[in-house]
Amino acid sequence: MKFHIPISNFLLSFFILLLVSCSSKTSIKSDAISSAYTQHIMQHQKEYMEEFIKDERAPLREGDLKDVHFFPANIAYKCDCTFELTPDAKPFELSTYSGITKPFRQYGIATCPIQNKATKIRLYTSLRTIAMPGYKDYLFLPFKDWTNGEDTYGGGRYIDLKTGDIQDGKVTIDFNKCYNPWCAYSDGYNCPIPPVENHLDVEIKAGEKMWTGKKKKAK
Image (cartoon, rainbow, N blue to C red; front, side):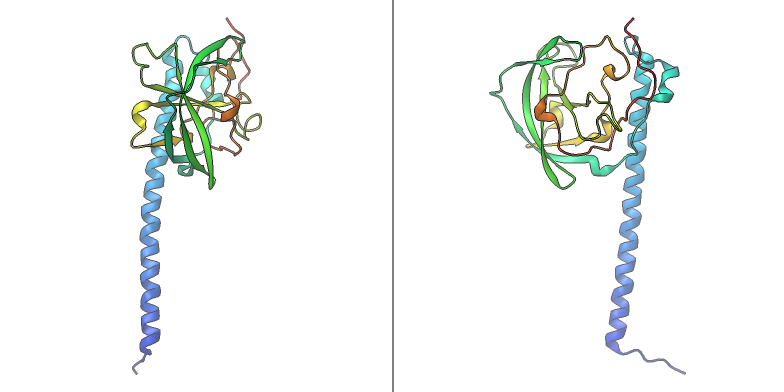
């Protein structure tokens, strides 16, 4: 017995199979990218925590690291942003949680697509460290968001960038790499307070979470 499929049904079946096949390949590729990215972020977090052990000034020691937590890596928070330099920005004194101030200047403004919303974020240069070896091209991004005081440290979080990260008016800001200021773990540090213009009207469920250890006292 032979089965005859009308040509229109045959073509329809063919295209459905083709779409399923393409979708499957796309899914496999997407999973591979996601897995590689997760590994990259996990390695970054490992190196970040190792720095606490290496740096004698750091507030945490090896036994404290069990209380350091991170959101799962989420590539959606790796944002490709446009960037505008602000060369005429005037120096200003940025307040810290210890009460002193530090001199900074706005370097430029990034506009990032966060949760389908164009969000402006200011990047700064420290006028104290700009002349120090290794810090000439350092950019500082302090920010607050809706997670502060709930999932993350109430005083905001930081991201480190370099001027070389900005190419052709674009910069990638990866919030999966944001971290807590040392003031989140102990008093006795001069941690800059994120300026009001960097209080973001979104949730950033990426990067370092609130430390769950007991806050330390200054030595």
